[in-house]
Length: 313
Image (cartoon, rainbow, N blue to C red):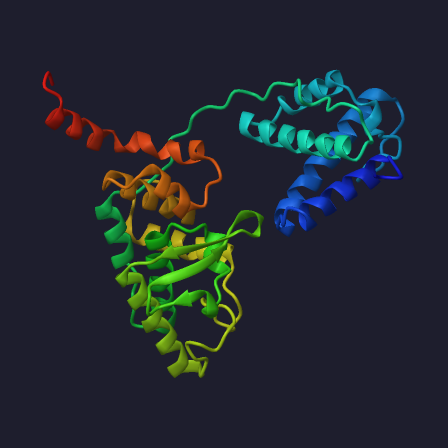
């Protein structure tokens, strides 16, 4: 039970619950805080003529005085300069916040429950053809330590379909090259075990052996699997920059990011006949509907099966 119902206090209590109870990352909690502070400021500005502080949650913001009309007013402000996806995300943060307050007995009802989420445009995820993936990987020059590291990074991204944050978070103890298995920590700090192919295993082994020869850091020394030039952990942003350089070098015509390789991994598995549930497990999706967005790209395989099987094709 929250003893103080001031806006800033309840928001901080909510963020603490996300980190402690649900295991949300610091980046996710930071995004929730930004969304809720913006919500509190917009609602407070609409309810009073008092000047708002330069930043942060206004002192006079009280979540107990917020109703569904105030939340719709918040969305109306957002519609001026935000996409539907961004608005949906911010509304989801507000819903979760009031759901928490309802459990804590601060409010009787969740005023956000009756507010409809903006209808989303269905976006087709970008993915690469098999030939483009091979072309991209072959662009990596392996005549240096960093070249071998980069080859290992992108072989692993394509082989396992991990999020780039999961890849950057890999430690040497998370990788078993003898069995071809890696352990990653995904959203909500949930762990899952993934297979990686022979190409990725060979690339990781070659990189770590070369690293040992150059720096004395052994394959089983502990710590981060992929290191930067200062032997610190390579960040997701750095991996994205490295990939961007490779894409420019080989002249691919589609937008490519580390997440594109994840989309490509899922698409190629489905094209080859993998079960949707299996792909869901490999990607770490909680909902099958999230994985289903990849099925549209497998229409050629479905049509081929139809043509072979249907008696009145």
